[in-house]
Image 1: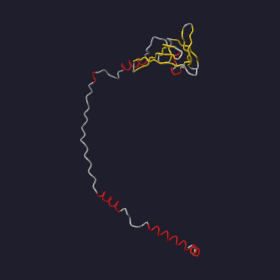
Image 2: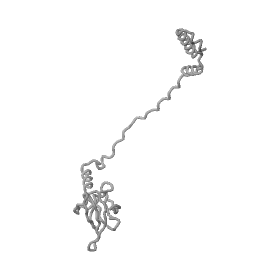
Image 3: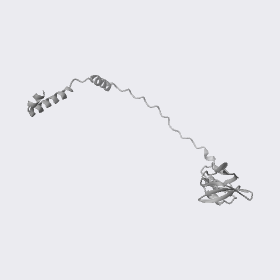
Image 4: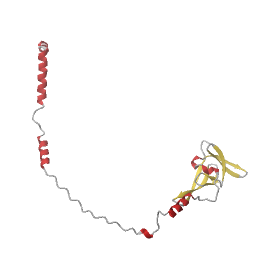
Length: 180
């Protein structure tokens, strides 16, 4: 077979290749086997779609009469003024604030405890400054009063706002810093 190809002129080889390609291309043009699919599509197109269900009747809206005209006005300036006053009131209004109440309690680090003249002091660091605190002093921004000091923690009683004008006591502690 290879000798036959060697003897054929190049034009004949091109003609032979073109004929083979044409035969292969026409082989795909045989009868189609998707007649069933075409039949189903034709039947589906011919079938009538069911009619949509009618919409339900809409009941007309009748507005209600406002019966609260005799009630106090919820947006009256007197009510808003009372609310603003209760929001700014301190639970310990007569007491003068101490310097350590300017810092959030999260900024305090307990460094230790010491006793001097029979009184126990907690040693804390805040804003890169060391302070000595004793029972009765105030720390933090939530009216935290020191109630107990030991070698592991400083216990505080905080007053936390609950709702608009109610205050709730919450016990919090500063634990001794492990790396101190």
